[in-house]
Image (cartoon, rainbow, N blue to C red):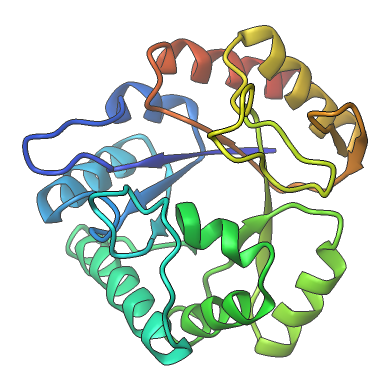
Length: 244
């Protein structure tokens, strides 16, 4: 089970996350591409750290929403959404290539990522953008009970997908992430996180916020590197995954 983390989300003089400290404990770095967070220098620095730690680099594009950190839904025509995704993916890939590497996958951010999980038109549009620019790159999507439908759509469009589960987010009875505005939407104790990770890895399921068991199959686990105890949590997650 590979660990991934959203990174490179600082912007100008504003610092977010503990990228350099967390990087040694992960396998995949989802690097923001400048629309919801980040800037060219931040992207460059984060790529350098990922290369030094031998971590796979993924593009982490989002809606053009710096003020809302990409967590607000914005309506786009399919051709416009494809264009803004290719713009972001290509920007990060260009920086990677100046350092002798390239992006290895794509994981959308925030509101766009969540919309992909419930809206097939949006998902197909994102898949098409990945296929058109980086057909070798898998698209990271949320692991949900309807994974077979997602796999079928990906096969039709000619791309691969990796399914992602979350170590520290609560799930709804439908197998989606509970909105952050809801109480207890984020697990904030090592015990709760370890329990959820163990269940995902060993049982292929999560327990919803109401207590329902939801079957999911995941290829990668997301951890968050911007909490107060991010380094400790990342180190602990690494130990937990390797022990299972």
